[in-house]
Image 1 (cartoon, rainbow, N blue to C red):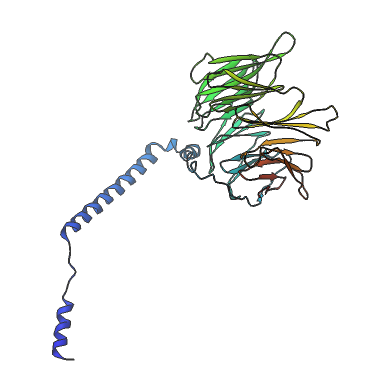
Image 2: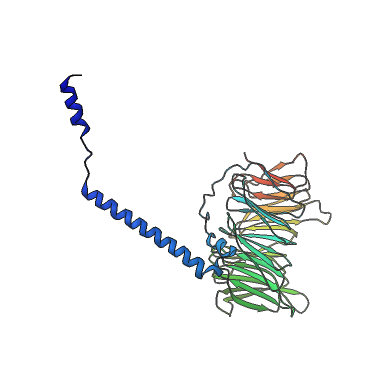
Length: 403
């Protein structure tokens, strides 16, 4: 090798990378800060376990995760076939883009892709699903147990002192429960967003329904009170923290059946009328149900789907669909024996779904109908989706009308 090449290689081997002293000092400072933060974190964890171990419970950890996933996208997607171990008493409900399924010994939640997210055991003889925009209330009708779920986990599970008659939950997690007390009176229990009981209200009438507003600041109680020859429906709208009701309304010869929050107010279904109230408790509209014997009803967001028997033979049924303002969307008579009804989620897709013994009738926005008959299996319920509905049977559910 030439001497000149050897000299060049020797010189090149002595070249060192340049170091910026300013950025080197900054890097050392950030490294030191990171070490200090890590040490403080470890000290804090040790202190928590030493002095606060009594507060580290499964319920508290579940409560910590109460809002995880509550802002998830609810866009419509096609459901795959979902499978569960159900029975004739299994209950179903739409919840945050997916479907909740509950029975006497289980609660399951399937997301909008049909995948199982929650699978919990429970012991409720007659479970009832009461969903809000963000939370699902499950309570044992006639029992004392109740639980609250988000779309990822069970947040809280509690017991009441007396049997539960009715319940509802708001978007912020506030909830109202109606229980039957030992002295034959009914008790309305109000819970805040931290699931602490903040208010008790004793009622002498027969409380049959209760609803809480979306913000949790107002609640409605519908009771049947004895009159001279019959029962009247007493409606009370109350504000949180106030013992005196904001408004009262008495409906003569009516029996309350169902209530729900709607459009900043409330809607109450009685045996022969549907009543709409504003946020001040003033009745805005009453829709009479004369000419039909009410059999089935479903209320969603203030809109109502009602089915009643028209003749004594039971061969004709009237289907009435109302929007959140009480305006009629559909009023038709069908020559079929109806055994259930669900209000549609998207009125541009379907106004309502009617269930017969062996088929599903879809009421279209124009008032027309489509019929679907499954090949086999008992139809337990329907869960309306943004497009089509979920046909629920004993062991599985699948999407129909998804065109």
